[in-house]
Image (cartoon, rainbow, N blue to C red):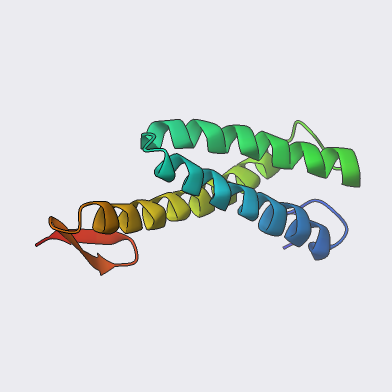
Length: 114
């Protein structure tokens, strides 16, 4: 997998920067956008900016390539997936608690009308 998902010498670096730090940032970004009722396209913009930040951390701390389209896409896909999951999860909880007379939870990511 070294060369497909990450370019550093160890999987631990990829795990630390992309999965843990980038995932935590993406989760909090998705949650914040949902809590402030921002539209989904705005979340996508914020997450793309965050993916550039994740790539910069790889570059500045672990001497990875900064302008690598392949590895930026890997980081961006992961960040977009985690941020989208957090957004939908938070929005579902918001809808069923804010509008409890209209909606009921039908799963962790969906609601249904009563």
